[in-house]
Image: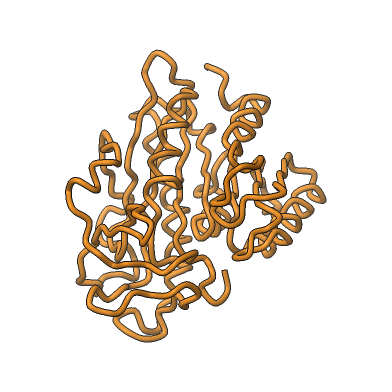
Length: 295
């Protein structure tokens, strides 16, 4: 979102203890998506870190090495479908619980192998004061001066799809059944993959309160089916971009489903309405579209 309005609350940059991170189920495997250093980050010499938000949510910061965290579905219920999960966080953080591991585990329940994407982020100085809500996620100054980290994150999304499609047989998934779901900034990463080169384009995708949704246009050489969800009271990215995204897919005659929930706010943080059950709606869409059928 422009002006960094993805960030919903002030962030307390406190290092997370091992006990705090224990709330996240460990992946079966961590997979580097590039054969070496990710292009453009050759001089990035800082370390990734794990922190807690002010509300206690675990987040990743300062990601240098893009990876996929593999959460396999039970073998007996596996459908051959995979879902890459791109958490949000304003291109400064990755919300690793409710936009990451929680989603991966829900996908597993439906027989879908999940791969959480940790894409590259704008550098956060561990010694700097906590960034307030509305702080701009920019690399205009500091060690990433002159670099467009948002574009690099989008390239990581494309590479994640490309890598997984090339290695699909290794995980027992079908190369034509690789989906991607993204939240807020992760939604922008997902749409970069959706509208990018065909070899890095998912078979289907879900854009959840996605940043920059209104500017995405379906590629003429094969736009994937799309699921869209947003809240009408989202004060960060708003809902109009999601409406525009839906309209663009409809005009292109590509399958698309849109849910605008009356309440939920950004991050679907306001509970009590339909947004609480958006994953139920996603599951229904995936089922009717054939993505949950066993091969």
